[in-house]
Amino acid sequence: MTLLFVALGAAVGAPLRYALALLFDGLWPGGTIAVNWLGSFLLGWFVGLGLDGGTLALLGTGFCGGLTTYSAFAVQTHERGVRLGTAIAVLTIVPALGLCWLGFWLGQA
Image 1: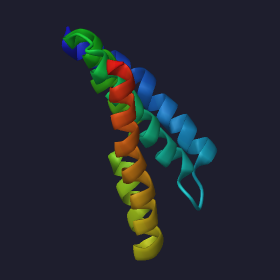
Image 2: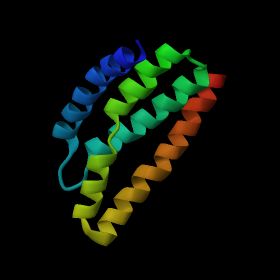
Image 3: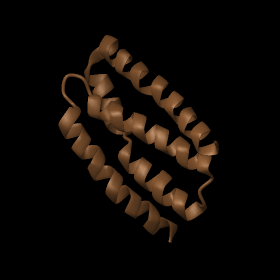
Image 4: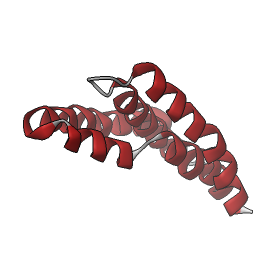
């Protein structure tokens, strides 16, 4: 059953990621950054809420896992070279960690 929850969540998250990338990625990968920030916040929030295993599989592993993307982040960072790639990496990872913490904190409140 957990596998089905993960698949259903990913079936919503992955197309949303793709749509946001189409809308906002260009010279600057705004869509990729946005989905990674949003997914980090939501995952922190879901964990902070203390969701049960099935719900966390659906929303956390499935939806957030389908929504966020390491592969596109890695490729886009590499393609832009050392200086711009490093800026993209820092502007993705640091806020994503902060947003995950904020989501977790809000979920526990």
